[in-house]
Length: 282
Ligand SMILES: Nc1ncnc2c1ncn2[C@@H]1O[C@H](COP(=O)(O)OP(=O)(O)O)[C@@H](O)[C@H]1O
Ligand SMILES: [Mg+2]
Image 1 (tube, rainbow, N blue to C red):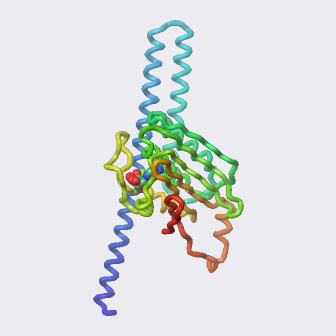
Image 2: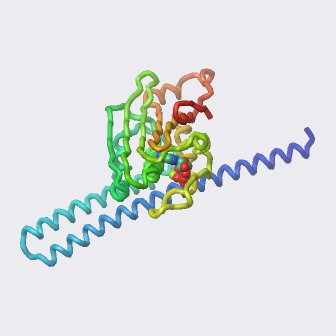
Image 3: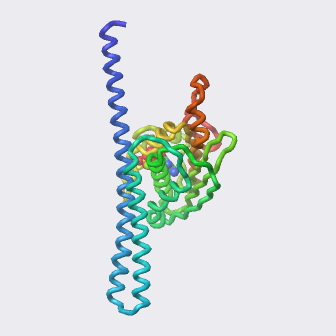
């Protein structure tokens, strides 16, 4: 190889690296944008409740009405405090550090942020949580994965539907399984292998609540899960719905892996797509 060719390759490698960094930045900004839009909407809703009950308490002087108004104001502000705490938590843990994490709590925190949005679009939430060991995760990153997956599910059910979230432990592999299932439009088999590609989207742009349309959500989800040595699987049937399964190592498994000899490493298949019954492995 000539010297010129070598410098060309070096230049190309540098460009690829730069583009990768730009993509990562775009993914982070998208996730942040969706988080800001979610929390602002939720917060505004809480403020409306507080304002309305404060007005009611001022209009009616009787103790019964005032007590009720205070109760509602207290409940709404407690919720507001939980929302800000959750966002502050995400803002604080900017690091990529992973630690033992209670996934059930993380799902609850995420659902709290999306409660109003899911109500508004008439989406019922079914939770089937089995007791599971702690996972070894970066809670901040994993919460962004959950946020994106639940928003995608909501957007797939414009006329309402059901969001089913399952949490269980797979003792054979010592992995924690999180299933996020919707009763939405589903994904056609020819589209399915592309959904994890950066910038792939079937949406026209952000919807009324300012979310989706960048095609960066699932590519971010995939990267986060890969960084955690986990796997994502998707199964979908057009007209019936979609289920994403996230598999994440437990603390025990993750810490064992860290001490295991590197020679045992196998090539992982991070993403598997199952359109209908025919599996495609990417
Ligand atoms: N739950 C789902 N139901 C149907 N289609 C989905 C679902 N999740 C993702 N998709 C498809 O995958 C595409 C990529 O998703 P994503 O990367 O989050 O980007 P975006 O939400 O910005 O379109 C979506 O545009 C949609 O076509
Ligand atoms: Mg999305």
